[in-house]
Amino acid sequence: MSEVLFREENFIDLGSIDSTENFLFELTNIIEKNNLQGKTVKINFADAVITQDDLRSILSVLKGYKTEVEMVYAGSKETKLSAIEAGLTVSGHKPEREIPQGITNEPEKNNEEKELENILSSESAPTEHKNTLYIRQTLRSGQKIEHDGNIVIIGDCNGGSEIIATGDIIVWGILSGIAHAGSKGDFRACIRAFKINAIQLRIAEFLARKPDQLEFDRTEKSDFFNPEEAKISEGEIVIYSLHQAYD
Image 1 (cartoon, one colour):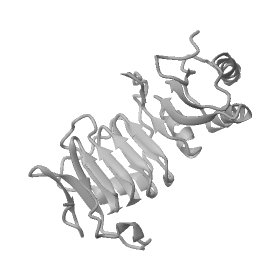
Image 2 (tube, rainbow, N blue to C red):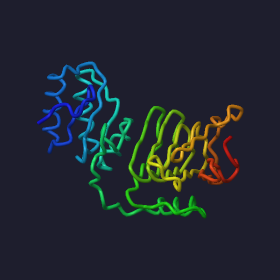
Image 3 (cartoon, one colour):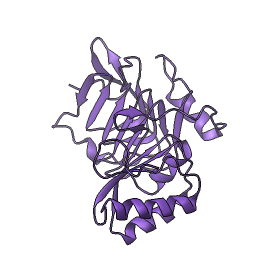
Image 4 (tube, rainbow, N blue to C red):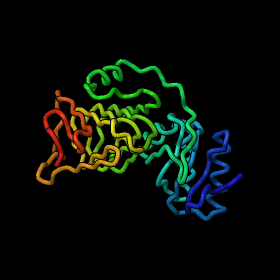
């Protein structure tokens, strides 16, 4: 069994482990054998399903070695959500190649998710629901989420957070930080939120930045928001609603 995957330094591969006990045993071996005590590491879980309890145990072992986690790579949606709940930066891809997609069945959407899609839908191309990652919490500053598909967030995205999706991005709240939809070149992708307050938006290869003279970071909570949508129109990213466009 290989301890470090690929050529990237301080990269721990736990994707082939089949139980929590083996995770902890193998993790201890990898840290000690590769002298990772006190270092910052990236961990690959591949398609393994890691619960919040499992992850707490793993983080407890790392804490004992004073080892911090820079990035978690996960193919399983449950593992991604566990890592996000722990405040970790999450990617759906391994370095140098993608993790094979092992999740094909989507959980049944609840009423809140259905309402979200109805409120934020527009005349643009509809969001494809295949391989959609639902996150039911606010993203903190410093959290970065990557997903091969659509991302739907039930909560705010604070300044300093970053969201990258190959499909659409939908936020049931205020979108601050950085958002990149259509990251693999999908020009039809869009970004929707109750309030688009992002310092930077990207759709495919198009980039838009927040004008320096507008202090969007001071957006306050409100009982009512007129949902906004950012999409590509005539060669630039345009926000439809209260603010017509980024320069």
